[in-house]
Image 1 (tube, rainbow, N blue to C red):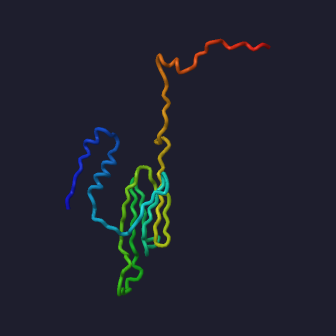
Image 2: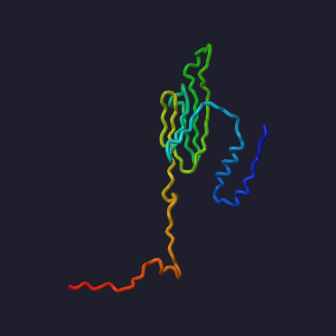
Image 3: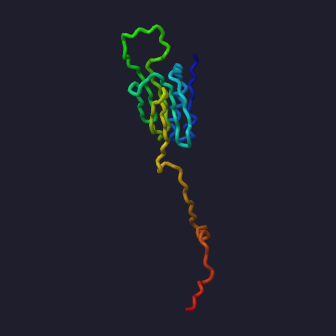
Length: 162
């Protein structure tokens, strides 16, 4: 397997504060062995909301764990062996432990999680603080052009007869 290392140093000249993005791109280049279990979907529900649906058939609520860390969601599961003396002639239902990690953008938080019919549904919400949302800046005129910004009064107001 060939590994490619990308050099992001030219990007440092044109962008400030994107260190985390460069780290994510660098980590994406280090591909881990592909593990396709359990299968999952990532759905964009709206402008600021997302949903992860993971097929975890056979797992109960207490056998699943969700851990929400800054910029990272970890979903893991471990089956409890309720009948160790059970003898299987064929075991086709997967019951192995798993851990799936999802990198989350800044300000994306887990809103809720539910388990129904073997599907674990995790709703995510992006909550950017008001102070960090884009805002319009008023441009004022200063100096010699400033007098043109306000209309000039040519005549004095007429006195109203009483």
